[in-house]
Image (cartoon, rainbow, N blue to C red; front, side, top):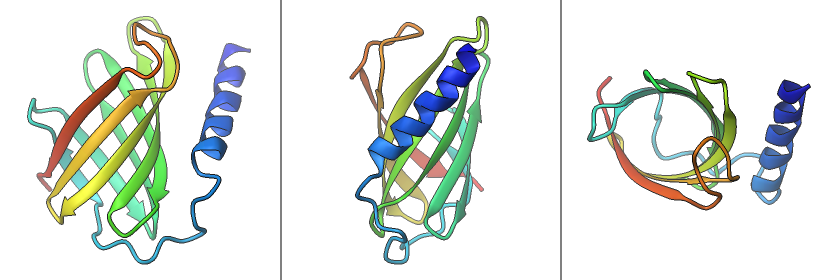
Length: 132
């Protein structure tokens, strides 16, 4: 039952996050499919199909599933499901990504709810560099 509620919440969050997004962004400037690393060494794998972006990032403490789309040639909006691996606690976050070059991105993520040790609106700036 809790899992079904999370699926419904994710669907609603995606619908609310992208109500004005174009059906297809004007040709994303870069293909971001690949393996990316942040300054602390965390690795995320991203897959781009036209303007849609999906990804996964797993570490010892958390598993993250990312889904969203380009909203302009260099801007991406993603919804992230973040699951605490130790206890299964799940929450939703939003990510705003700016693709700076073919090999660098800036990321701003924010908690969309108060759960799993984070407070709604709590934000985390980051950057990613392509490694593959």
